[in-house]
Amino acid sequence: MEDAERFFEILDNKNFIFFEVMLESVEDERAWLEKSFERKKNNQEHNYTILLDEKIIGGCGIKIRQHRQFIGEIGYFIDEEHWRKGIATEATKRLEKIGFEELGLNRIEVWMHPDNKGSEKVAVKSGYKKEGFMRKCVFNKRKQGYQDALLYAKTKKDYLASQATSSVSKS
Image (cartoon, rainbow, N blue to C red):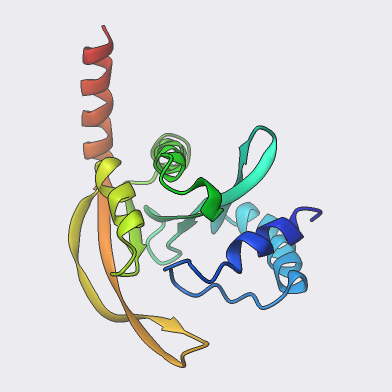
C-alpha cells in the first residue's frame, strides 16, 4: 500500500499510449491495490512490482480470463525514464514463465493500443505472433467510447519450443 503513490505517479504520465487506467487519484490506486490481494487469491490476476536498484520503476501482471481460465493476458507499465531498455521485454518473459509453468495457462495474449509501437516491439521480441486488429473492443471511460486494439499471442506449445531451442543453443 505504501507504493500506491509511486505507481500512480508512473501511471499518470501523459506520454503513455495505452489503454486507459481507471485511476484518477492515489486513493484510487490504493483501493485497486487492496483488491489485488483478493484477485490473486481467486486466480483472477497475478500482479508484480518492477524494481531496478530497489526502486519502483513499474508494474506488470497476468489477468486470467474467468470464462476461459486457460488464457491469460499480460500487461505492464514502465516509468518513461526506463523506456527502451528491455525492461518490459524481460517482464513479459518472466510473466509468461509464471503463466505457462506455474498457472497452467495454455495461451497468453498481449493487447495493445495500435499506436503503441513500443509495446508492439516488446511482443515481437518476446516471440508473440500478431493475430489481428480488433475493432472497438476496449472501452475508454474518459473518451466515452471504444478503442481498437492489436492482439498478439503465444501458446504453451510455442513457449515450450522456444525453451527447447534456447536450451540447445546454451549447450
